[in-house]
Length: 284
Image (cartoon, rainbow, N blue to C red):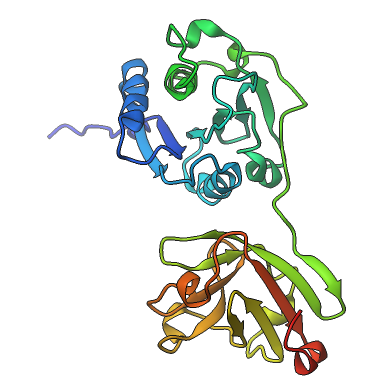
């Protein structure tokens, strides 16, 4: 029997989609059709289509939590675009491993914060666009074709000149009020009703130490005094703190929605009182 050398299979180009389009309209399907028409070999992966409508920070959080788990060469298409049809620029941001195609409105800000080396280009080469370009659906006519051509290995240099003044913002940081007290905010509420705060172990290390005690977390109508290592550790109806997979303090409940139990939602204040201040205070 003759031996046959086995060549490694070439990786299909990957394009991911992160949008606020939902799934009740034709928008996502149209994006996929455009991409596949240009690059039929593309593997399209839906990261999320339920970013809160028009919420650039929620989009930034979503892509920042997912992009780095994909193979090198992946093209990430991110469209949360309340300024569609205006003078805001379409851009490509390229790191050592990935390309990101998005509107220049800050939706890539948390990617910028994580990546040491990035080159950002203003997309101006209109011959890559679908024509005519709609003023209301540029995800279809500009962003999707550009992502497809990048997946087809067209050099990013061909799409436009590099820019330095791209839009970026910092996620809200907790504010230290005085010794032993800080104030954070709920950045988002996930589908399980967990309240994702902006407080990290670097901000309040005491909360995340084994057997943490002597603290109060005040959010909504609840005073939280326990941290748990897993959701299942919580008692029925208990609202507790936990270090979530996003790297932030979460206010959670075991098989319950903390957002309902605490009467708090996105944007709610989260007051943390530590040490001696917690022993003598019931508020922040």
